[in-house]
Image (cartoon, rainbow over all chains, first blue to last red; front, side):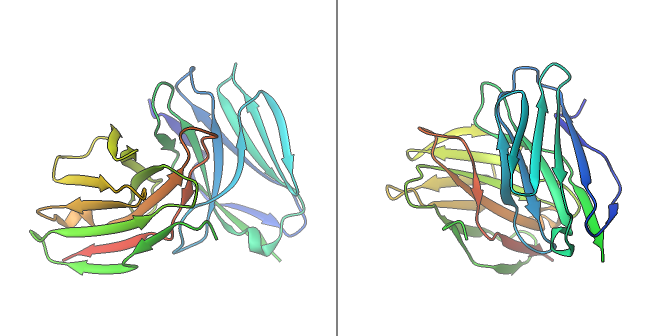
Length: 111
Length: 113
C-alpha cells in the first residue's frame, strides 16, 4: 500500500469552476498534511497546510482533512488558467521528519 | 520566492562520475531535506540534515551522501552515477524546532548520459 495516493489522470475544469482534488494516506498516526503546486519544469510551491480535522481556507483554496477516513482534499474555487499545474499531496510521516508525497494530480483550467 | 537557493541549475554528467549539488536554506531554518523527483512522479525523500547531522534517510544507496554546514547550508553528493539518477533534485528548508512546513528551492536538473 502506498503511503500517499492521489487520483491519476489530468483534471480539466472550465475557468471559474471548482477543482476538487483528493488524497488518501496509509499512516493513521500522521498529523501534518500539505498541498504543493508544481508548474511544469519548476519546483513544488507550498500552498496549503492543515493539521486539524475540518476545513482550512486561504483565499480561493480550501483544504479539508478527515483523519478518521484518512483523506485530505483540496478545493480550488473560481479556477483560473494560472491554476493549471500539478498538485502534490504530502504527509509528514509519523515519528519521522520526512514528507511522503503522492504522485500528483494535473489540473488544466480551460479558458 | 522561498529564499532557498540551489546550484547548479542544470548539470550533465557521464555514468560513473561523481556530482555535488548545493543548497542554501532559508533564513531562520535549521533543517535541510533532499528529495529526488523523477519525471511524472512525486518527490522521493533521500535524507535530512538537522544541526549538521543526518536525521533520517530514505531508501537510497550509500553512494548518496550529504553534509550540512554550520550556516545550515547543505551538499548532496552522488558517487558512481547511474542513468537512473537522472532526475530533478530538490532541497527543502524547514525549521524543525518550530512549525514543520518545508519550502523547496528551485532544484537541480541532473542528466546522466
